Length: 332
Length: 288
Image 1: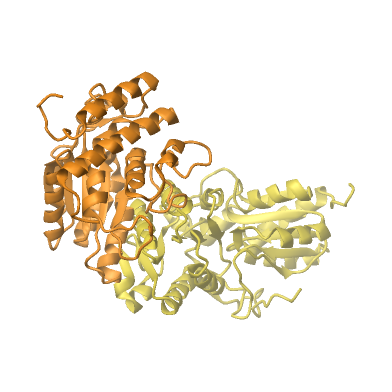
Image 2 (image 1 turned 45 degrees about the vertical axis):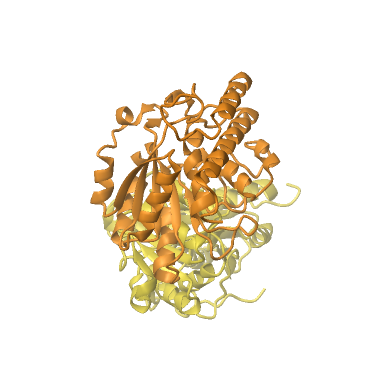
């Protein structure tokens, strides 16, 4: 396997930071340049979700629908019927939070290539509080047949993911975070829908991360190494279709696993990986994320730390798990 | 195929469609009776004298679009499509059966000629509006029209008014919507469940051109469509007054027939009635 190209100095103070949503904004504009059928619809949050770059470049292909998320995706379904590739964006709390049934019936069951872009997802939405910190979206979208679910880890990957989703021909969900977060990938790092990537090889445990949590796992793995725990970090930017092969191959080697997401642990990345492993390779596993509760106000970083999802807190939780859970051996 | 058939011929087709609806529902053993029967004249008129379409080439790129927003009324669309030659009439009897292309509520991916998947109420109008927007603003195709039927009970849904506002804002001139005003929904009369009046005033205030017609008078339907297409700078809604269960005496006006099919005896009686009614369907109050 070729080595994943990680950015330099990511574990230092020098690490570059940028909101993941900014990558989406750039990617959408590029997708618009590549295909005249790409159109963008927004529900009164154009700059917040970074659609203004597309709007400025292609005003005739930008459609404002007002604060109406049900209409947002159903108008898009009609545009797709007329041959367009519609990107719809709002906050994840509202789309897919409010319009799940419309997404299911008019885009997924109807098999139209509407892109649902959920901005401001997760705890990094910070001060806005629980109503706006969407934590259930990964689970909601993952259970929907025909739906592709992508959660980029940083802004560079978000840009690549957006361009890839424009041409995948499928109804798709793209999850974005609001606040500035570290960039760990580079222009040269691979991104393909449906692929997971080993960012750091190890033999004692596999740490699966998605979205903003992958970076925190890189931090945790570095600290764990000093404690003589050799952790493998696997980045899972596509929750559906899940890269079963990469996940199983890694866990076959390490014999135990942890999943981390900035979302409810039920049904999300943790759900997906646990379901896979329970059926094919039942190793000890620990799901980390938000555990059946709602978020709350605070600065983004305060909230992340409050929920124990920063690299240091994760290190402690992972260490505790490693100490109590034996590595699975075949024929166990 | 537009403009070829006489009113009498269209009425005969609508009667034939009603008979197929009864047969389909009896065979299926479940489904909605009142709405489809009430819409038979409208849907027949759209497919046989209004819309540009090619049954043998459902995705023909010069076609007008038809969206059924109230998907539970799909038996009428299936029956009209079979009548028009989209598929063989024998297939109508597979309605709601395992493996059928004629699902209980319409699924676009299963049957060529369907433009959308619907059933959950309130979102067909905006899907249709999306196509109308594309034709008018993105595709430069001013001669193609989008026709959409919504139920009246369906207007309780908030999504409908989001779409109404959208179409009004963008002045979707190639958009012709029919509200099937039959005054019934599952729990009873629409004005008891959730009052809709002043319905015309509501649409007008959203920027729409509004007409009201007798939905069983084929000439009225044709005239109203002609007017709607001539209206230059607004979407058009045609409040289409229909009788639920139209054509079958014991079903007419009775909301209990909203969501149930006829049994064998009832179907037999209904088919007999439709035979005697043939050709007289638009002459209200003249007895049978």
